[in-house]
Amino acid sequence: MLDKLIDLLISALKLFQFWVVIYPYERGVLLRLGKYSVTLEPGFHWCMPMKIDRVITADIVTRTLRLGAQSLVTKDQKPVVLNTVVTCEILDVKKALLNVHSIEHVIDDSCSGFVAAFVADHDLGYIVKCCAIPDKKLLGSCQKQAGEYGIGVMKVQFTDVTPSRTFRLLNSTVEAASYWADHSTRADRL
Image 1 (spheres, rainbow, N blue to C red):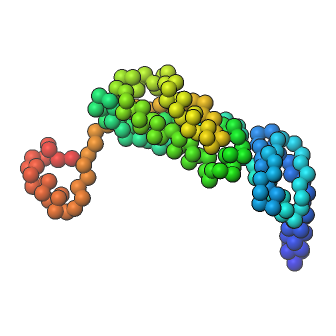
Image 2: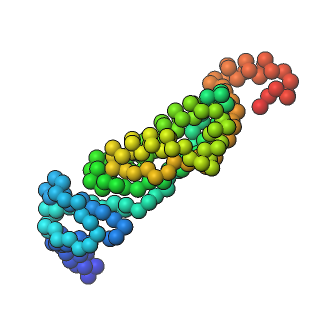
């Protein structure tokens, strides 16, 4: 019984809370009756109670995100699997919080396509060199795209470039039987 009374008291206090604290690693936006009102900097801020004001916050510290491995073909027709790391930060918290569902997805979407185009336009030797010295043109393209959503890309670096060999998956048992019948020696099999 006492625990329910304490829960009720805490809920009431939250409903009538008229302040918010934004920490140094955060920025926030204040929504008044569901509409953008102001961007909040670190510190103590007054707000209207009873859910008239709502504050949404985001960490603005530099973050490093690993893009999913991409299986690509270079300009010199070499298949590679490429891993990319993107270092970024939130520059415009209003855009990042109110215009985007997921900051991580924006970074992935903003950079994956440019990485694929970059690999298609360069030979394997140059791409391997980019593991040590990131390409500035690729960085600029990613910065421009992510900047539209309030996100600043500071670095795009390849962490792993692995030459790959692709295998064709067999789609049906008929296809598999045909494949194995045509390849009589064990050395030809996977």
